Length: 134
Image (cartoon, rainbow, N blue to C red; front, side, top):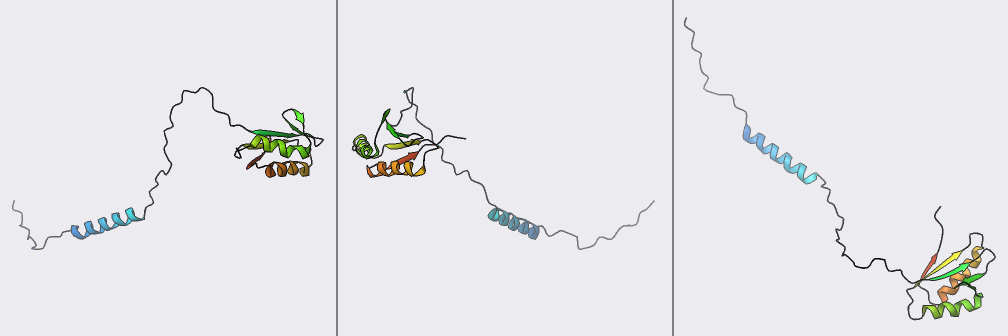
């Protein structure tokens, strides 16, 4: 059985690959430029090892104000007019020592503010009003 010969066309059907590749590369470049890459900006620090077994405790001056409004320092009652000289003497040249004021929650705010004012006038740079965590 003889099959008829097909006529070959002189023009072959081809997909334009070069322009398709160009478009793919342009899209790739576009998406690379418009994408936000997340970079971990944290600072990695390797802390040195220490031989000391206990952490160093920073020196502080603690002033207590009880519910009646009396001021205590070093387990003794201190009149407000003497508090200035005592705090100034304890601070000395070290003005960076924190002064912690532990006032009872029922004490009037005015009394705690007066104690803070006296400590500030004595040269305290760091005043801390202590609170309890709820």
